[in-house]
Amino acid sequence: MPELHITIEIWRKGNWFLAAAPELDFVSQGRTLEEANKNLLEVIKIQFDEMREMGTLDDYFRLLSRV
Image (cartoon, rainbow, N blue to C red; front, side, top):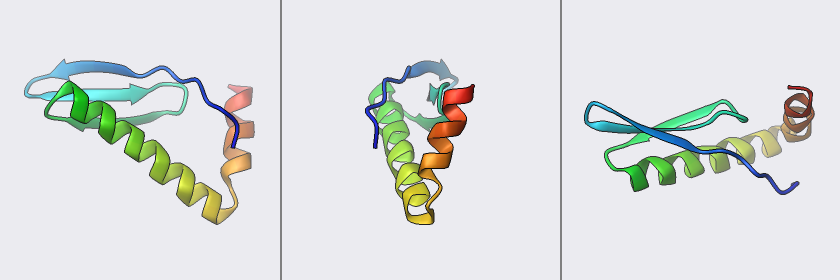
């Protein structure tokens, strides 16, 4: 898997912190800034693992390179 450099944006909405990786179009949340960041990284790992198992991870990276 290629090395990724992504932006993680975190903001507060009510009692929650939202974390987004705009380049990947992934979002997560947590009750603290740290939890939101941790949850987002977990979402990214799970999604990449599932795409790898399905054989679609390379297609996903090619799609990202066109955006």
